[in-house]
Image (tube, rainbow, N blue to C red; front, top):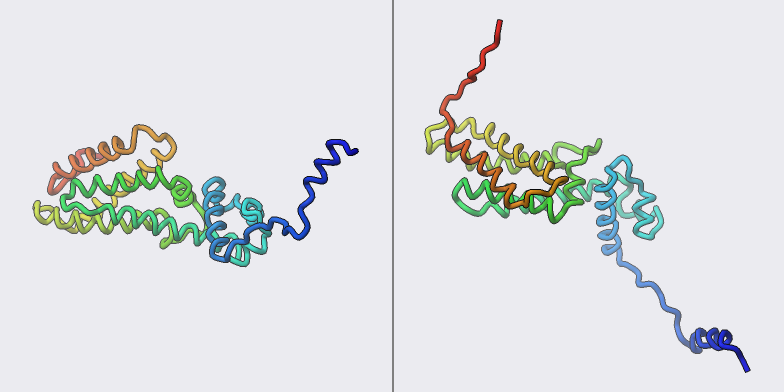
Length: 225
């Protein structure tokens, strides 16, 4: 006669010929995507300097050489993450610019940026964090510059039709895009009011300001001797 413990042990023994369960191996492409996703999250949480390959490998449950094999190091992983976010944000904003009226275009651009911040918060945090690797062609500023050039073309045509100097369209486009971008960074932390309200107020300020532009503005302040 055997006790319950012995019986439990016997039941736990696999039947003859049974194969032990094995872990499903990822393909190289799947592993690369996993590492990019984990790297994106860690860079968003800690920034470039404080992120280590050890932590990325640990979260992915792989050895450090696996990460090096795919990206060559932390810099390579970071460059891939940033490049993807730059393209994703730019695609969202340019795709949103569909309506013909400048007022609607401003609304679409503002709402597209806020929606990206809301839905892709880790990616946006990666873009707005400063890094020694950030270049003029791969960061949040570069995305905003690209958007600014698109807005410049829109404003240039509008300025010409209203009798304003179209050469100043670049200045105004940078001012408008900068206003939306900085407000977006603020909203990233506070998350209120709701994004539609934020977009409406941004466009209210921008559009009503543009609607009442002076053709040749001048400063009303005077330096005191």
